[in-house]
Length: 287
Image (cartoon, rainbow, N blue to C red):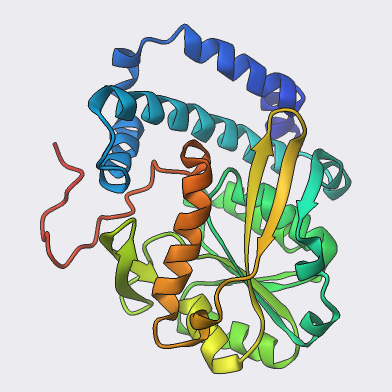
C-alpha cells in the first residue's frame, strides 16, 4: 500500500501546504457550509469559543477545515515515507530534555492530542524509543493491517482499547517501558469520566491520569505543531503535579485546552467531541 499512498503525497509537505492555501482562497465559504465535517467543526468551535461573532466563527472554521486536510496529507505522507524522512521533516523539538530525561528510563506515560497528524507524531516518537500503546482499529482491513504494522516498527507494540489492552499497558509500565495514547477523543463507556473541556461538559478519556496515579510514573503531554517559516515541530510539556490527584482528568483537559488555544485552527475539530453529554441527551450535532 505504500506506493499507493506515495502517489497521493508526491509533493513535498511545504509545497503541498502552499497548494492547499491557494486552493482555499478560491473556495467560497458557502460551498464548505454544506459539508458534514465542516458543520461539525463549526459546531465544536461555537462551543469552545462562544465569544466569537458569526463571521469570526466562519473564518476560524474555514481555516481549521483547511488545516484538517493538511493533517490528512501529513498522515498519508507519514504512511509512505521512512522514519528517517519523518525525523528530517521534524525541524525542531521543544523541551526535548523532558523526553530524554534519564529518570524516564524507569517508565513514561505520554498523552497526546490531535493537533495535526497523530501518525506523524507517533512515527517520530517510535523512532526515538519503543513503546506499548493503544491502537484503534481502522474499518478498512487492508489499511488497518498496514498501519498497525507500520506503528509497530522499532519493537513497538499496539494494543486495542479495552480491559485487556489497559492491563498490557500497565504491565509494560511496571517493566519500565513507555506508553503513548491520544487522550482527547470520546472513550468507550467505562473508560472515561465527565470533566470540563473549554468550560463545557465532556466525556473524557481517563486512562492516562489514572495510570499516572496508579503507577507513579512520569507523565508528559506531546503534540505536533507547524511553523510556516521552519516546518514541523515536536512539543513536550510537563503537566501540573495535580494530574496525579483525583482531579487528574480535569488537569489533563486543561493542559490540552491550553495548547489548543495557542493555535485553534491546528486542532482537529471535525470530531464529535461533545457527543456524549449528561445534560443534553439528544445529539447536539443534528441539524
